[in-house]
Image (tube, rainbow, N blue to C red; front, top):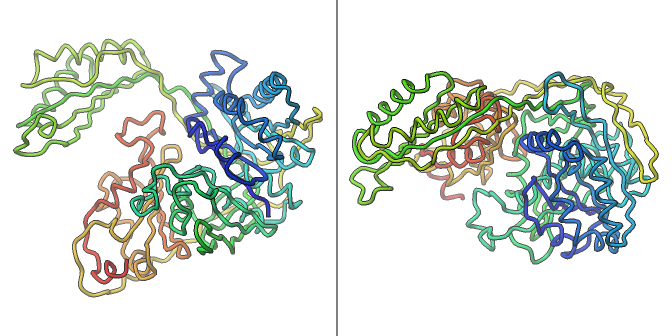
Length: 555
């Protein structure tokens, strides 16, 4: 098997993780994922200011103290920190290495950048075979731009075992391994619904490792002595993160997540077997980022009585002053009746303004809000000072033919190798699922759903996903029959007017919902209180419903 660790799940993850992973035990490869959709916007703005930028500069600082160790131990480093400028990061690494008297062999992958009229950035999600080509050529470090997150694991595994384009089951198994470890500590107890049950209470979970075998099966683990835990449930939670239908589309393979079988082998060791793959689609996903305009926010504190009337007064006053266009109001009823202190008696009115004019969205708006301090509702106060507007981005997804990109591996000796698209492709269509019949399990009790169910949620552009899993087989039988789209809309009223898709994953004792349009124009543009839908799962778990009493006894 090849032992592949991960030391970064996003741009801003634990800085010391690269050192911890290299010092903590044996590895063949150490990966780092830096590219979320929001990150591409950040890097796009960086490069607009300075064409030499466009990569994750944090990675360079992390290499300062870890590059020598990696080379001494023979650990290959694979990262998408190249962002919009992988060649620039490769050159920066070479300069850093020379300063320390080191001589790594560096390869990089490019070709993901797509010409797109008026877009800040447009990048195709490339696959794993460019990474594999660099490793086959002896690279110690491979830098990429926009590849799929799982490709950081699939590439090294494909290089180790010599997988071909048609080894779909192996590629799918490695894709699952990559999906599990790509978000760092989320696989080892980070953001876990039942964090209080972890040995260290999830205080400092370690980063994950995937031991990938030649057939694509894997074992998820972590270094001994690190925090958190690797259990069937922590792995299940991550498998449900930011997915769509059971067929997980990628540029190299469609991975059937509903075929994955999880088994606890021992402490902090979970095996994933049985994953099946089918030919990839004929198209690649393209992420497109644009500047959407300018926005600003002000928050009013409404204390005591007549909360709704106070909010209505602020709304009318601001609309009179700056106009209705682009204004949004969200009233958070955080107030409690008969409270003994100001904070407990207060609600929050969040006011947002989006506009193409930075002046209207800037001081014209924020100053108008502040000017109400002595001329509005009783007890008027704000938590925000007046300020200028900030630009916001809009992310959208497009597609393009697989053969429409110039996927290129630049080898350590400078040779450029074109990575051909897959020969076998097939359109993927999710199979309609029949709703399982609700089983009568006898007497019910009214309790929070989180007593028997775990959840993990996240964002994909303007959509959100909510994966819900049961802790026992009997609870899973009930869950699959009980949690319908209609019931989800009752429990989460903000989803009621939206299109909600439901997908069952019985092997994981889980059901996944895709909520189209919940996040509007995407994370960077959303003014929702939870703009990335990260807390949607915990909101669901906090809802109270009639639950079969016998399921509580089995938990």
